[in-house]
Length: 148
Image (cartoon, rainbow, N blue to C red; front, side, top):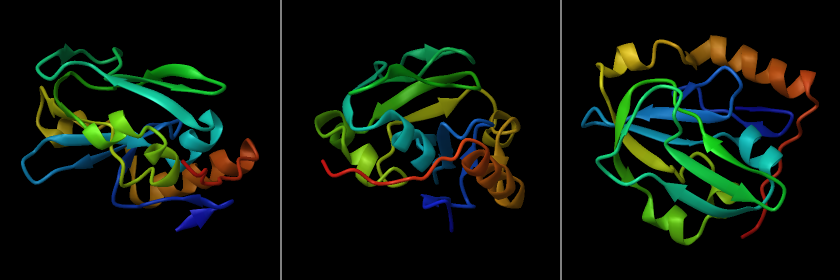
């Protein structure tokens, strides 16, 4: 699905500003990545730093930081968790986030609460789709994928 050229995957969970997506993994871990909106706004991603595996991250404390040619900032975290792993491919080739934002996850985390409880503040499905399109239209965001 697309809105203003911005890819949307209804099976994922999204924060209210559509900066990040979260996917429940088979083992109960949660994969965290950047949305198409977020990678477009950031521009070419130059560097990704993920906190060390085993590091606890309370809600409000980022799981990673990202630097691009025009922006540097945190990957937001809305629930208490522990860093399980970083995506080595993204650490070595950060521009994967520009080319494949929904396949190139940044970190996997273990939520302190059951996944359903941890994800209760996220949008998903039809509600997320409507809000995603509203954000694209309101802010006139037209997504594009950058080459490495």
